[in-house]
Each structure stands twice: as C-alpha cells, then as structure tokens.
Length: 193
Image 1 (cartoon, rainbow, N blue to C red):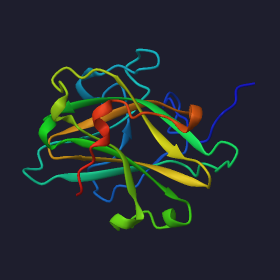
Image 2: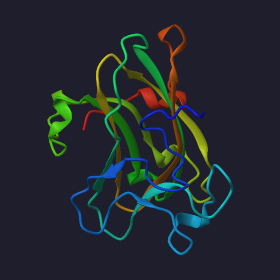
Image 3: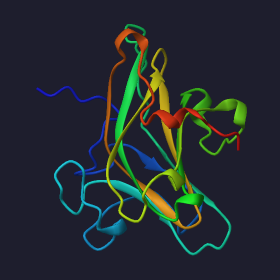
C-alpha cells in the first residue's frame, strides 16, 4: 500500500487538506480548471490542463496583495527530525511584483492563522519572479529544509500586483544527514518585509 504523508499533494483530485486563508474576496489560491488556469500551463504530474494549485492577481494598480495557503497539521516525528519539502513551481505575469515565500509554524503558534507577527514565523524559502521568464512559464523544482520535531504547518504565501505562481507535486522525505539545500539556490536570500 502507498504510504500517504500528510501534506503531500499532487492536486489531481483535491487540495489534500491544504486550505486557502486569504482574506481578500477576489484573490486566493485555487485549483486549476479547464476554463480557468494561468497562461495555459499544463499540470506537472500528467501534462493535463488541470491538477495543480495557483494564485493570480491582476489589475490592482501598484498595491500588492497577499494570498496564503496552509497545510494540514503535519505530525512531528523526533525519529525524523528534519524533512525535505520538495515541490514544483511556475511563475507568470509581471515578475517584479510577484513573489512566493514558504514558512512554517509549530501548531501551537499556528492556531491563529491571521497572526502575522514577524517573530512568530521564519521565512525558509523566498523567490521573486523577476529572475524568471514569466512570459513563458515552465515548471521548476523547488525544495527547502523543514524542522519536523513537533507538529507543524507549512505556509505558502504569494504576493503580487500583476502576476502569480502555480505549485504542484508537494512531497516530503527525510533529509539525508539533516541536509536539504534550498532549490533554486537563490531562494535563501530572504528580504525582511
């Protein structure tokens, strides 16, 4: 039988317990559909037109909007203290205002999902789309080290005024020797904002 890890998701049937927590009425993470998907981007898993999650934010002037998607609670395991969180991403739209960041919170601290106090979250992975070719979005691999000693949640936070990101094939595996280098490499330089 397949060993299903909580939080893993290919978005082919549903969002696997990942949930949108964006407060804006018109902007959120959503599942791609035949009629609503960014830049005709195909699914990473099967090449189908559906089967991934994305956000797109357009025509908001100069104001950036933030959208968040939160994993289900991932049970901690002291026997596997560090995990590699592996995923695929694609960016589209105007890259200079579009970014994606990943952080995690222990479940105790994550009980208030709207809590944005900077000391309560540490950004583990950050990418601005300005370094990517957003005119022709392509799936690219990403990964980041996740602490797994206690129960936690992963947060995917997108920001844009004219663009977006898509994600697919979220997986976790034990970090060999506690190592899991950020992919792409330039995602470690996290700005303070």
